[in-house]
Image (cartoon, rainbow, N blue to C red; front, top):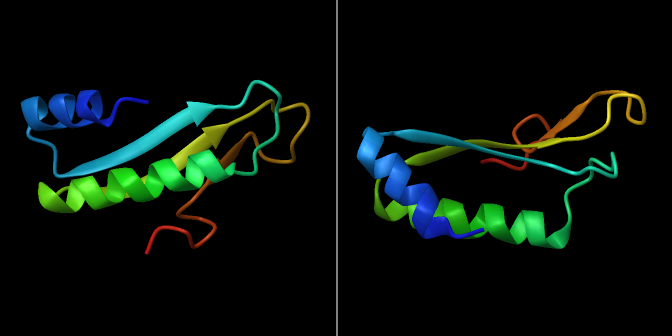
Length: 79
């Protein structure tokens, strides 16, 4: 993930908040260490621009998991 692209788009649109989202084709919804680190990195960068990262959602395979997504916010990982 190139966070410069994320913030270029956010700045061009005048965004004040972001929701990150990506998929795990395996269906496994638990965030990896890379997912957690990316979220922290994006949140730190967002603070510089006064943009809030509202959530990071991981979408999986509905037939494998009880819910078809994982939400960092719902799990209390977005203070």
